[in-house]
Length: 242
Ligand SMILES: CC(=O)[C@@H](O)[C@H](O)COP(=O)(O)O
Ligand SMILES: NCC(=O)COP(=O)(O)O
Image (cartoon, rainbow, N blue to C red; front, top):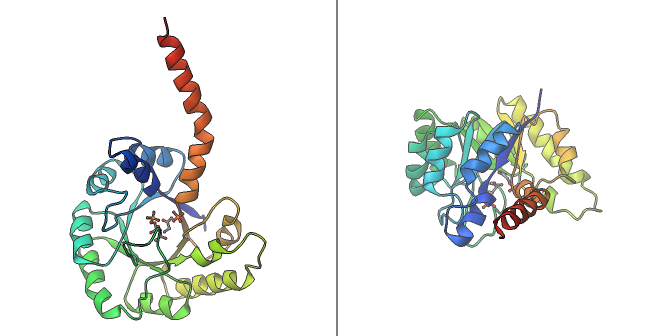
């Protein structure tokens, strides 16, 4: 099975929101990612709207040829904003205003009563649902019991391990969870904190169908694109000089 890459463009929007203006335009970034071969685009519509905005969802849905996956909290406010945009996928994630980024997976076992009607509502709107969970077997079993279409296994603990430490145990947790998810008929995705250095062992897990990668890709794009941006600006100012 070929591995798909979902590109998370949240941090293009973070940069835009830093000045409250119009650039960089996340929709343009999504189209570039798509033409570079991304198999999907992911955005996280946070309750505090710190990066992605409601208009981004509408525009992305309109222009993208690849599936749009919207991450959001399982709250009425989030669903009211996300459902009208009709993304292909919604990934339910835990969320708190204080966090810099997502801290761990959704506790699908504890939240099962609240999640059941949310999944029903999304699916009846024709939206497939993924649950972002830690690589814990009981959480994966609960996702299957709730009839989610997919699980995204949180690779945050793995990604946070120091470069020279032994990742064997965490990788085994992710592998076991991926195997179980696949056996239970779920699509299995993985993501959080993945980068060029740590992605290999996760990409090698055969049951993982798709990776969602954002922060490291956008950070890298700033670096590999800066040379060209400076050259373009030098060209523009030199040309304008009498
Ligand atoms: C759920 C997950 O692992 C990440 O996609 C995270 O939710 C992204 O949100 P931020 O871009 O705000 O860190
Ligand atoms: N769900 C993970 C995701 O979309 C991207 O996470 P990150 O690479 O920005 O940490």
